[in-house]
Length: 159
Image (cartoon, rainbow, N blue to C red; front, side, top):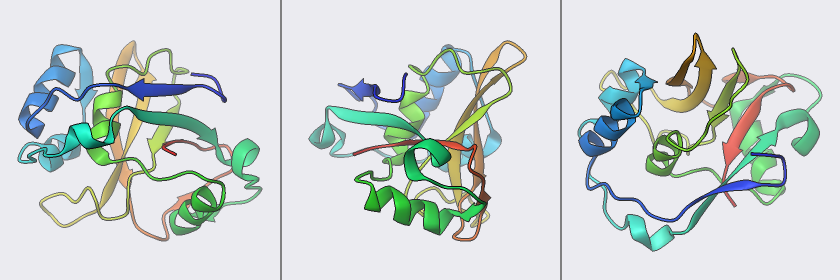
């Protein structure tokens, strides 16, 4: 995915999180326990309503002019001011099946809405995709307003 390109999700074939998790594992995506915890009991409704769904990759420095560390709440304000939106969590998780060729050791966060992915301990998360040790990962990062990000960070967003 280049700066100007996007990933288009045309179909969402899952009724619940268990089906989605099973498909990710079948495709050798290594999941964090938090992803499994958050999605194992989710039911999906009205998912076709938003299709096709486009996901874009943006760089905080290049695309949002971030030059110093920034809080997540401010990243989200900048996204909105630049015509971007957060990603619905189930589309973020599903998109990991199609995101390949990530740079070794890098992480790209998904800008999911605040408090849309809360684990059973009450901790909010946002997903992040990575590649290391020859494996594709889907992990999480804390999603709270004052989580700190840096100009070199990259996010997946929608429009």
